Image 1 (cartoon, rainbow, N blue to C red):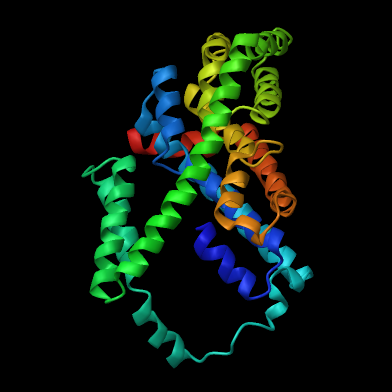
Image 2 (image 1 turned 30 degrees about the vertical axis):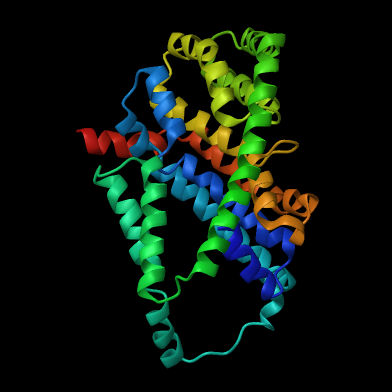
Length: 316
């Protein structure tokens, strides 16, 4: 999406930080809206229904997306320069818009093939990437846009982008291992949680402090695997609903994906865009989205039914 959406927004004079921040922050919603590997891992560790976790993530995910959309509309309304001020947008009629629909048919087909296969169980989310690449190749062939030059360029871009992402992941994994050897995550978690005295909301506050601090330096999966063995017994002892707590954990991990200095999504966007947008601009662009994430987190904590109502309806 960084390669597709951000260059198009930049072409229409969108502010670079605003354009890249939208993509970096929106990419975190995949952790809360199923299917989500983080929910699968949490479900296994907490021994709760992964299906119930998936259903529980829908409303919080939609609320987060709604807050993003509302903030984007308001900011663009009060500062039109962020969204190109409308000057670069060509004027089009209904007939032209309907005619343009004939050019976008590959997108719903590609989305339907990938998501349809995941939700029907034909293939896993990981396998869906390969299926999506195959379907995209077939669409390019049908549209007679698949030639040797385009194929080489696509492979080159995929290799460069994937290498950048893997380099970041390898670095964060090494850093996580050294943190484990230092004992810092365990000591920090035990110190913070020892102050909660079994109060559910103090436990949530303590977990938030742990995840905000460690989330600046440790990638999401590593952070979850480091902390859950320490946190879950305290949560269970406080008689907290593990589904609700799981959604809180996932939301905290989402926030960590765009929190400096190591917001993985920000570096992925930077790797995809190269020199077109600076790292500082991307971090500046996600600041408003961080504020919306904090509001969404507060709503999830204050109103547990946002996470628990749908699973209750589906399972009763």
